[in-house]
View 1 (cartoon, rainbow, N blue to C red):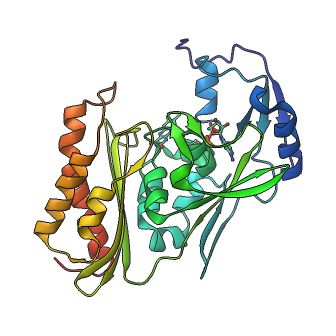
View 2: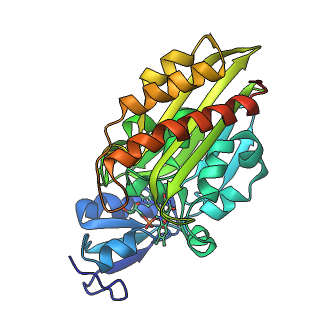
Length: 296
Ligand SMILES: Cc1cc2nc3c(=O)[nH]c(=O)nc-3n(C[C@H](O)[C@H](O)[C@H](O)COP(=O)(O)OP(=O)(O)OC[C@H]3O[C@@H](n4cnc5c(N)ncnc54)[C@H](O)[C@@H]3O)c2cc1C
């Protein structure tokens, strides 16, 4: 693999879409020979290092109607080309979807967040993608469009493996929708990188609902511990319907750590990931519980 990330060596044809119809028509025509370009912060690196060599690049950031955040009683709808920076600056994200806010805030430097999009973070399908665990714990739905129409896919079914999604070659991710969060709900995201604003060695998100001293529902998701971001139902089941105590949080955190099967790679070792996952999950559970109004 080439390591020079300054030069785009291979030739390609650059297509700039100005409408969804235009983008979908090109995707329909060129399919596997094309790649969608949003912010380019993942794709251009892969092209410069020769990991992908598309014949056609379809630029979608000028497509009208894909860059929006809409918050109302039905929840949150995010257009696929919405930048990470715009999400970070959105009050509805900050106050209502803390895990997503914390994830976006943890990502890269401002310059990258100005360019990078939420659609690109999902489309790149890195096991370490920081927006994935929050979207998993919120139960997000993704809208995929092609010339044949649109289909809705739960985010849990979207990732198939490193760099692989359920998107067909002619499909475009157009929208991410998140259900509304109740007043007694709380969520949190934690990430450990080698340095600040780095790709995660491991990340975790929690979302839970409270009723009095009890947790009525809980979702937990880890990134960078499997070929795709994953939920850990083993730990979730221990919390749902239970009174939340420090002891139960520790028990659930241990169960979460026992459920994951991380590997060693250039960012971290399997042993380290196993150890810190327990501590991170306990921290994330405490934060989400307290944000839901719970006391410990
Ligand atoms: C220095 C640096 C630091 C980074 N730090 C982080 C980090 O901390 N955490 C993290 O998670 N990531 C990080 N990244 C990765 C990257 O910035 C993010 O994944 C970003 O959100 C990608 O968005 P983009 O718009 O630039 O995607 P692009 O590079 O444009 O696209 C990425 C992939 O998704 C596909 N795609 C894009 N949009 C769509 C769509 N609407 N429908 C279908 N497919 C689509 C593209 O074809 C491509 O395969 C970093 C990258 C760099 C260079």
